Image: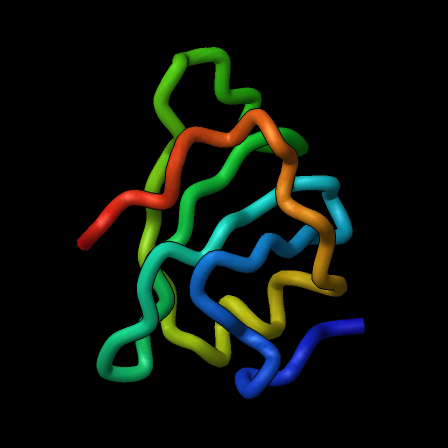
Length: 78
């Protein structure tokens, strides 16, 4: 079940039904910038893939909040 836009928080991690994990880096002007890994991303580089989506699109795409992995790089400053 999707989350609500109010549940999107900078620094928190979320997971999609396809097991893609996302960490929110910034929320500005109704847009969410996030880093993603796992699931369909298949990221093998040391840096995380960064994307931006409308807040409602992000909320619809993820279905739960998860604990961020301890081995993630520090949250970037944007």
